[in-house]
Length: 454
Ligand code: GAL
Image (cartoon, rainbow, N blue to C red; front, side, top):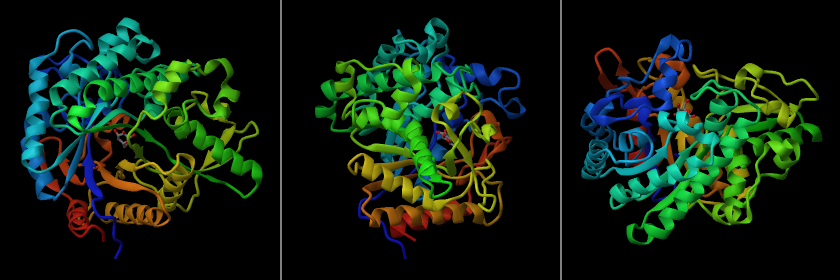
């Protein structure tokens, strides 16, 4: 038996654009994902989130399924344009009502809401008006939106995540252009990343100054990172793996824990990496009450020496050149339907890397999961979870302060550029009939939660 610490948080996660549908309902404004997915060739089969899982209309049924599965915590995101249709300006009462009802329904069912403010669906108006995350104007727009959410929901929501995966927003949205808003540049990504960090810091400051004492919640950021294993023991490959981790996770975590970007980024990027003022550094440092981590896979890293290798893995927004790293995978590693290698020990190593680098912060894995086609026993997914949860437990035994785990995802949903072709859910969704049903992995997860282990 593998046991987890008492009070370990067991949850599942989703995000607004991936499940809600109702893309224009009740006054909702358009987001960059509404716009991007409607453009030809941006998503598989031209899929969009217009209907998705129709969660906007079916949230009660979904919460009943969560309750039936014994899930204790639910991480969802708020769609900015339901609350503020053009990003700023007047609050849309119907949008507030939807999330208010959702939160109430969760609390009635003893499920703790963990709310992400930004899971990639930027108001289209802000993208058009000033280039979204490329302009410092976004910082105050985000702070204003966050404040509205704290005001309306903070009495009931005690766990806030400002931004989901700044790395993806910056790199895939503004570097490689494979995600909304589809910009390609080896400068934009670092500028977008800079504003994401500053927006996070402002929202946290606002929460701490005006709400945290009365409302008694916590706030943090969720960053994603793969593990990077040195391809060989050679010092240059070890250094390459470390560089790769710093360009991935430390890009966002160092400013939050240390007050500045990693030295290697400053050195390699020069003028392309914006600088923080001392005031900004002071705001950033210590700006997370917990360390949110999304983790999916592992790759080998080695010194590139001009050969950047599997560019198709992450496109060519310049980031591998910036790092001077060549990435690859072991042909023998099993892969998910995303093509991502299943390497549980990478998760363990990453948790210990975080422990050592950031002085053992409280970590919550706010996403971990896998895409597989539906099979009767769902055994590939169950084995994936067994592997990764086993690795989590080993990291805890080795001293990592891991306090919770959220399965990605509660149900099959719109998987961004992959559309509906990839199924990450522990609940099956038939996208024609909107029927849902628990997969074998949901049933397995229920027993894990009940036994606090497996
Ligand atoms: C994460 C993202 C989720 C989900 C998952 C699986 O990067 O936050 O929205 O799509 O990956 O690809």
